[in-house]
Length: 278
Image (cartoon, rainbow, N blue to C red):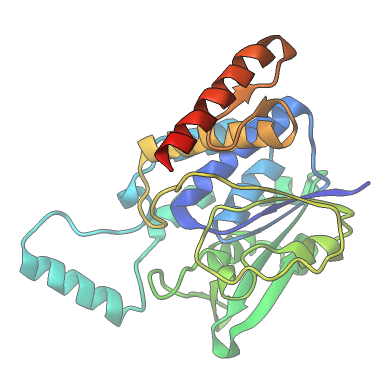
């Protein structure tokens, strides 16, 4: 059965997906297909290349200024001028992020990989969705389309490719179930990070499991290593929960029959607290 990992967009919340990937590797769950939108496709490309350590270390070290060009801390007049320039230029400059993508992306290796890969971006004019597999992306252009998929306009500038301006794939499909099915998926494992965008109903008809956090994963455009570390841990344990390795909703408790009496006592005490609170 062809298994697909579907990674939603969500900016800085995407660190959660790295924790999911860590758990999947430990569980021996390997996808045949990965599709992603925005940060989901950036993470997905690294997952296809088996670059867990690269993805982990990147998320644990990057800050806001490593992703986008921001002003130095100055007075209100300088900040006002910076914001005027952002509006004038159509969004923030993400050259630093592009440099990271260029450093870690090996397009030839991506095309040779066993795992199929696809992404979603949107043409700015007419908001026409473009769901693209690697075979549908011209040679040497994968980095451009990855950046196009992550162009979260108006906060981030539209990405121009061959005279066409593209926007974040979340403008059309923030969780590309349909693309995964078109690529041959028969089973979906979807990772939702509560990003801004259009998440279409899942009409694929395929068996689907969704991994998502009980907790808030932070701001979309705030890249902070300490938040990324926490998000990765949440993604790791939420994935283990879906596969029955741990129990709980807000917290993860080891699924081991030896501890069942203690868990039962905990549940009873917690239920009593809820009753007293009501």
